[in-house]
Length: 606
Ligand SMILES: Cc1cc2nc3c(=O)[nH]c(=O)nc-3n(C[C@H](O)[C@H](O)[C@H](O)COP(=O)(O)OP(=O)(O)OC[C@H]3O[C@@H](n4cnc5c(N)ncnc54)[C@H](O)[C@@H]3O)c2cc1C
Image (cartoon, rainbow, N blue to C red; front, side, top):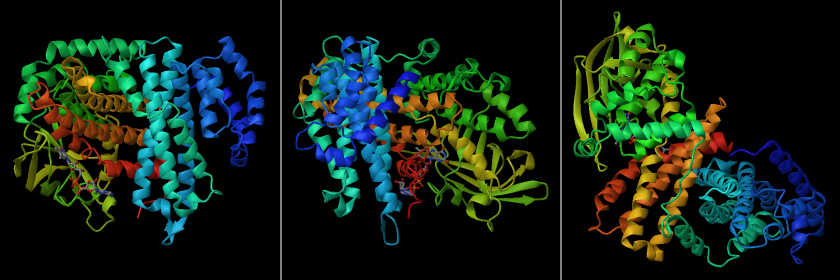
């Protein structure tokens, strides 16, 4: 979804023009007339109106200009002129305009909170401010992606184009108003002074948002465009290679994933099936994304994301696949000879399973605080301690165990990672059953002796080993499961007639929009990863956005779907389970902290 070279050049040229002609002072000056001649003349000189009327400029080209107009609050009827009918093109351009405004006002807020001090520190170090800005950063990024997707889809004559245009206009408008209002709030009293610019964005965003009346009508239009008559929601295509791979994965699931496997996983709470796991290994899916030279499938990041989303979306119990592939990948990167040549192949073939022993009673989000001790005892290590939430421990052959080896060093520097065989004397497992139905475990380690060959990475280097593994975990946000929830509820509402109720239709539409935003954020990580970029912040944005959207959707659907509906149990399960996705793999608060600090450059929180 990135801009073409020509669009990049256009973007920069329009940006330069508006920087000169549409400064906040010029915006203020044009307020009484509602028209800025200098901006208009500049756009005319660039030939934009001619290019639009001749059809030379695509919707995606014009969207670039619209985005700059939004960002600079340009006081000209650009969109109304290039797309005079209130049609799909106009909606897509409006979406881009809102996305531009939202990004500009978010930048204004971020700059302000870095500069403004209270209590002796920048207000941008307050967590309540950081977290709201982090949420907005994800939402605004989603606006940019969705607006762009809508414009490109319309140009391509994609059947999803009209629905995407409505979705993008609603989402981007919603986020622009939210961002402007939050920015106003974070300016404190000063934001209300007319000398400050932030109020310009607030007023302009709200006026634009209500051009066609109450924006909630747009949600009903989205519902109609997604599920009216014979439609069944969006049908987004991947590029040809990934699309072929998706078909392959779907065929695999048709063959290997049965209703009994899913039902058994739900009954036992163990999200693993030995037969399915082995079939996944035989198909080479466990290491699909690794380079071929180290025994992987050489699949691109987009393809591996597609694989995981198809598995999640089908309801496949694949906890062990996720854990084993992450542990094995870490061993390939940082393990010793024996781990790489003996254990990794057993993991890849499905012979060996692993579980993660990080969390402890007093070390959850602050996982570096773990107290499980590993002490060198002759040429062996002696391990004592307790781990919480060791999911899959009762099935696993190994625990990837984070221990403390040097209590006298700073907490991040005294940790060491081990890969401990689960049949080692001294390990005990106690089951834990959870609200979402998943079984996890408490694991106890009492005088467990392991040879030094069980160590992964250097002594006291456990934090970096752990972080190598976390990168794999965060980049695989589970979007497939919430997407399946939204689609299932939409189909039910379509078939049962519940969709005729606007109170139902507008909420399902809003959740469907959030799912598309989540999908775009997720695939953006994969696309960036394909270029070799480190997607730490983007992974956090996708994980945060998707899991929070899942929780909101499940909560609303639990209200909407009556107890006698056939899908009720499915919805009830989603409701009970969704919240935990905002906790494990790094809670939403932890993700917001990462986005604020590393994505927005805000100071460390206090
Ligand atoms: C079903 C399930 C399966 C799990 N599987 C595993 C597993 O296999 N292996 C494993 O090691 N762990 C596992 N976990 C543990 C999971 O990783 C932890 O629950 C998670 O890290 C949070 O830790 P905690 O539960 O101690 O909560 P806490 O860290 O105590 O958090 C409590 C609340 O405080 C918030 N909070 C914490 N720190 C901050 C902060 N700095 N700023 C703002 N808010 C903050 C959190 O977001 C949360 O809302 C699992 C958990 C569950 C529920």
